[in-house]
Picture 1 (cartoon, rainbow, N blue to C red):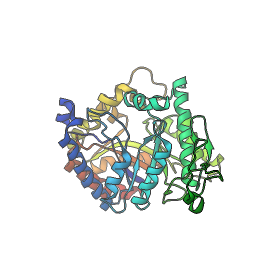
Picture 2 (picture 1 turned 90 degrees about the vertical axis):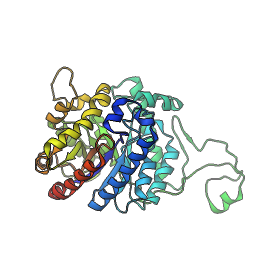
Picture 3 (picture 1 turned 180 degrees about the vertical axis):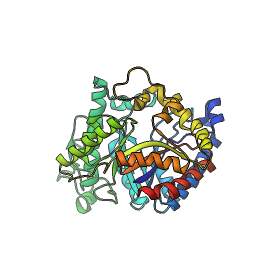
Picture 4 (picture 1 turned 60 degrees about the vertical axis):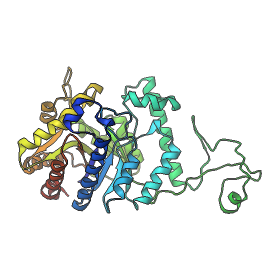
Length: 394
């Protein structure tokens, strides 16, 4: 099982965040970068598989201050040697797919082949509807509405463009919203004809290509967090993408893994063992003292989840099949329903043992809270995980 550290990242201590507007405090941001440096370097030394950052905007509150995960990836890559760096995820419908293809290819080269890629559809309306206005698309919660269908269409369209740009020397393609390149671009330049490609005899550009291409061929491993629906799992299976399950109901998880395995094999990806090319998402904090671990986890995910994610509907990841009514995403519920891998090494080992026995995921995405959880607490947690837990499940 491969361990990936996942950072929002949160900015400011618990007390600073609860006072408000922690996200615009310059020193808070500098402290966050310091913690990322120290923790990513330790993770590199300890042998973690990867580190990943989300994409969200306008987080003046400090909950998810990660405007550009690719830049954060590069920041970490320049200070480490082996750990992989990626995004969980680039919100594809609101991105220019040509620029994104270029940026990820550059990251892959600058990290010497350590990049991985995440793609997602976007659910936070405050920023998605602001940035998405250029593309006439908004946030979605996969409700099959017209808005949801428009978002999915853009997502699929941008994904296909990414693949073509990464894998073809030059491209001439037409989609509903993109013309690559637009017709009639006159670029009378002899160097294109002599040393490049994509210009006709009249000097009109007929094809374009990005340079460089990704260092990893055909392109880096792609992930899709945080996947809920069978449709998402079938898409990921067909495309060779790793879905990250954000659910705590073992029956639901088992069904999604079955769907993925069946669809992947039907799509010609060979016979996969259960859990292969699938990830599961959990909050992780380990300490010699269980009470200490829970104390800080309450100030990390136990604070952010009910205050930020709960009101946006993420309590659904805690629902048991057939359960009715509203689910309160407080820390007690998060812990009781198994989203919190928090406690002593022995206690967390037992949780991981159950996870592996039931689902055997190839990846475990571990939520990390720079800011609300002190740097020394997280560093000790990482060391305990990698020395006393991870070796049992490699």
